[in-house]
Amino acid sequence: ETGVTQTPRHLVMGMTNKKSLKCEQHLGHNAMYWYKQSAKKPLELMFVYSLEERVENNSVPSRFSPECPNSSHLFLHLHTLQPEDSALYLCASSQDLLLGGENEQYFGPGTRLTVT
Amino acid sequence: ELKVEQNPLFLSMQEGKNYTIYCNYSTTSDRLYWYRQDPGKSLESLFVLLSNGAVKQEGRLMASLDTKARLSTLHITAAVHDLSATYFCAVGFIIQGAQKLVFGQGTRLTINP
Image 1 (tube, rainbow over the protein chains, first blue to last red):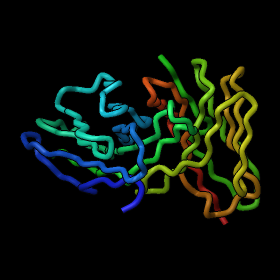
Image 2 (spheres, helix red, strand yellow):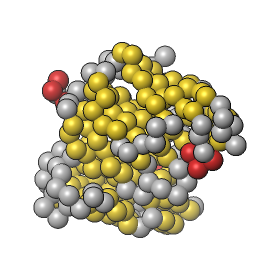
Image 3 (cartoon, each protein chain N blue to C red):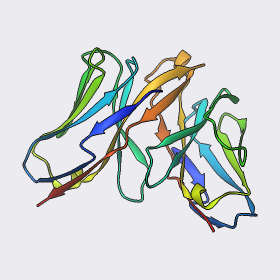
């Protein structure tokens, strides 16, 4: 595997279900991100992790719960979602700015989530 | 609240023509990124602009950044069908070694033969 991978690629869940999205980066980065892309809004940053510590929580409802067990893996735990949460969820990673570089974010293919 | 606005949001053009997409933002930043997204696909990084006056070119695309005007442009030269996609600009803000990106709405570009 190379780059940033996400599983599952598609997910349909009911409003009472609990599910998790998984992201894995194979780039040696140490910052990871969750974004939401819905049809009628710009890409929205949800969470930022740097060196496994959450550094940004962009006023996201508590029904979304992130977890970053190590610098290569990022999860998004979902529970009691609403239909308006249906969207494409994108994970990204980047190199820590303190280590130099342009801090370019590399995106995974996304998980298409449908809440019924 | 930071706003990032792209113009136009939709652009239909003929092959061979030139055009420019504009990205305006409301708060000072010297980090500007351009991404491309094909339908049903993820975001692909095109350009990273990290200083005032930065200009980068790749094939038929050229991006520039004017931090004083808070404006970036993506210029397309002699467009070809393969460039049809949605293009996003994003403004970056550093937070504890990571970076928060605020995206524009995207410009859906369609290039007709």
